[in-house]
Image 1 (cartoon, rainbow, N blue to C red):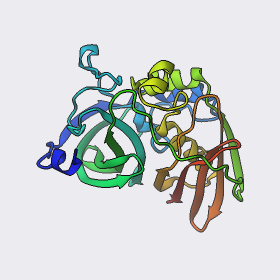
Image 2: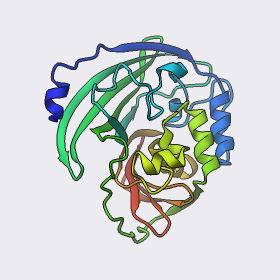
Image 3: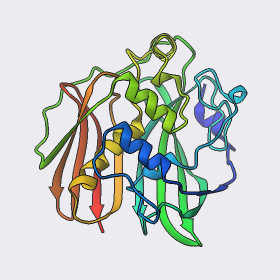
Image 4: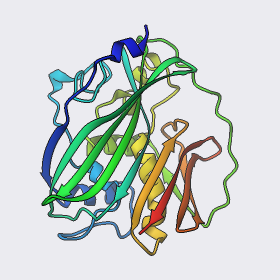
Amino acid sequence: MNLADVLRGWAPAPLETAEVIGPWPTAAFSALLDLPGAVAGPGEPLPPLWHWFHFLEPTPQAALGEDGHPAEGRFLPPIPDRRRMIAGGRLRVHAPIRIGDRIDRRSELAEVAVKDGRSGQLAFVTVRHEYRRDGELLLTEDQDVVYRSQPAGQPRRLATPVAAEEPPHDWKIAMSTGPRVLFRFSALTYNTHRIHYDQPYVTDVEGYPGLVVHGPLLALSLLEIPRRYGDRPVAAFDYRLSSPVFAGATVLTHGRRDGDGVALSAMAEGGARAVTGTARFA
């Protein structure tokens, strides 16, 4: 199967949604990881990327696919036996979203590219989101997701993880990733992807050795460094996921001063580097 042929002519229309930003998701994520000083009240700004706990799609149970994800969606490519992986993203903060704001979001397909990988062809899909308050642009975000076709039960070709040395750092945070953390994060993001909670599915169907830690949770762990230790708001954040982390691992997040920002990375303790990123201050 040639994914380029499958995706030729796929051009979903933009999607516009709106939501009033309530305080509960911020309090819930703060409680999930015992985060200090992150609970925001009315009028206070959301930390970068915490808007991910809003604009969730209430997909009916009957509309879920075999993998737990929606079977169809505006920006889900029409790939048979579709498997999904978060690849990375870019965020630009023009002004903060605040608790109590009514926010309008416009989402559109920004780019589609087919590349060859270890396991065959991969479709890289970039969706761009713009968040506005009364017409003022607050956030611009690109999300990169990788899709491939993998029949159920086919072994997944995972690269042998190479244990990484802890990088030089000015700050370090440890985060547990037990099944309860994964379950609560799935609930908080309304994420029904079975790789995060269904052990027989993730091993027998997707071919992973264990439950997979959410890519967005790893990205958020990077931003805890500038949230806790930075002296200015984050104006830009880029990140890339490179290796999966499995439930039970302790994730070590490192931050190092880098000019007008922070170089960031996270790794499973004793394992490979999982995600890298850069935050720039306003």
